[in-house]
Length: 256
Image (cartoon, rainbow, N blue to C red; front, side):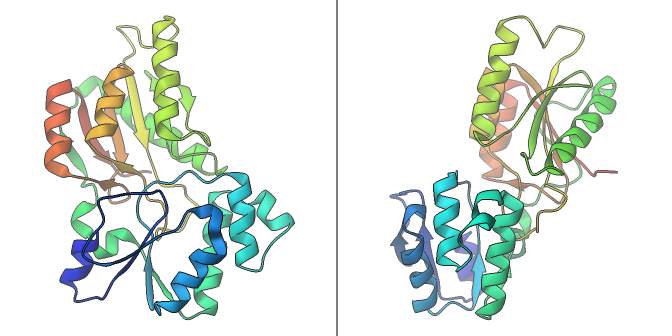
């Protein structure tokens, strides 16, 4: 993402929220979400004209309250705000400070998932309808701001992403499969990811990479379906290698 921005000729400040050690070549600030006032100060001091949010991060309720407080929106708003509400707070702050929010896909459009076959073996014709149903289920849980990802067995949703994230979902799916509750030969497991319908596209687009594929394989997933033009594919060559190695079909579908 940073390299794509550099190609545009932009001067960058990278604010690391999760303690990465592989960031270099730019002004890098390592600020945990628990220190929201420092985070806001870093954005102001750069000074920032455009803001891109990229990468996965788990946000606790305490951190949500801290972020809302730094935005001057502490109290009830912070306690009830899910991801959509948090995105709204960020949007309001940027509007008030004349900062333009840009989606990661606007900086690096080549990361967006195409429609059709993406990697791995071709999707079996008999799984086309279940894959479409899985994508619809993923969008359905997004309407209540729960998560972006579901696992279906055939066309039956069996597990949904929650605050624990996709990795925790796959651990639960693996346990259900171990217990013999899902994933029989007639109903293979399908993992689906879709953007939350009410969530703005500048924040938290669904993302998959080689690690996602490896974790899905460990859970017994046969197919990964993502929302075409609404999902980011990280390290496309690595993703393709992982899909081929694990025999998982990856396909992009449009919703509706």
